Image (cartoon, rainbow, N blue to C red; front, top):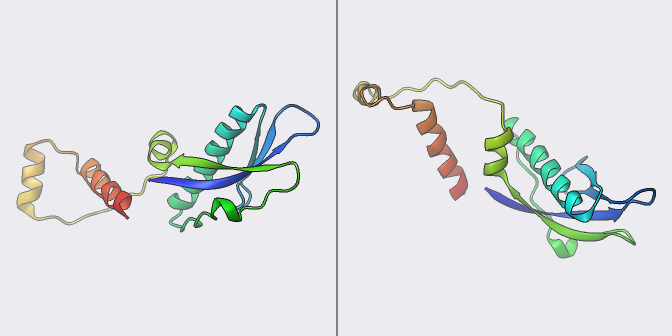
Length: 132
């Protein structure tokens, strides 16, 4: 799942770099010592914010359109591209145990072929989530 959120970049007054605020994600604020680093840090902070919400079973905010995002004087708006699949694969740590019921013949087939039932279910659910 890829999501794009607008972010407000404000040059730091006391040192080199930028403060990054993602207005659609309450409390999502970070900074970087250069523009490139600020973009990287903003992307990481936003991905972490979204992952936390998803792991807690919460809905994520709909991104505000770029042209409706207001930046204070001296600041500018840019878009952050969030690759949630890659981020959650790398940093997602919360797992939930689920018991499922399947036909006995399907269980026998899976065991005979040394299939990882958890992996198959995760892949199927991820495919469904990406389609929606």
